[in-house]
Length: 236
Image 1 (cartoon, rainbow, N blue to C red):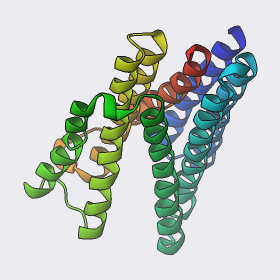
Image 2: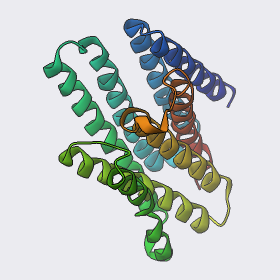
Image 3: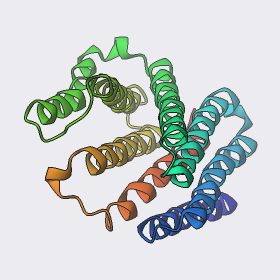
Image 4: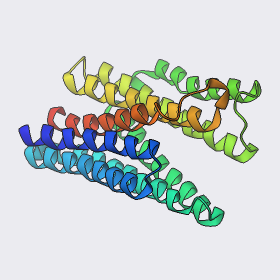
C-alpha cells in the first residue's frame, strides 16, 4: 500500500503543479504536469490490480475508465497549443470532452453492474438533479451556450448524476463496507470537479476566479481518480 500512496501523492502534487502552470499560462509545463498526473492515477490502478488479483475484473473496468479519462485529459490540454487556430482548438476540445465523457459512462455502467439500480430504484430520482440545475441556469440566462452544446451539457450532467446515484447504490448494496464509501467519495468529487469546471467556463455571472478555480478543479478530480483506483483494494 505504501507504493500506492506514494503514486497517489505524486498524482495530486502533479495536479497542483498543473493548476499553477494553468494560472501562469505556461502551456507546455501545464501539459507535462497534467500528463504526469494522468499517468500516475493509471499506475495506481495497475498497482492495485497487481496487489489484489482477485479483483481483476472490477480493476480492469476501473483502469479502462481511467485510461479514457487520461486520454481526454491529454486532448483537452492539447487545445491550449492551438488557441489561435480555431479548427484545431475545436477538434481537441470536442474530442477530449467526448473521450472524457466515455470515462463517465464507464463508471456509471460499472456501478450499475456491481450495485444494480433495480435494488434501489428510488435513486433514479437523483439523475435529473444536476441537469435541472444546469437547465435553470440556462433558462435564467446565467449560462449562454449554443443550443446543441446545451443539450450535450445536459446529457453530460445527467451521466454525472447517474454516477453519484450508482455510488450511493454501491454503498447501500455493500451494506456500508469501506469500498462503498470510497467509491461514493470519488464520485462526488468527480461530479463537483466537473460542475465547477463547467460553471467556470460558461457561467461568468457567478464570478468564479480563474486564478483560484484551477487549484480546486484538478486536485479534486485527481483525488477522485485515485480513490476509484483505491477501491480495487477493497472490492469483495
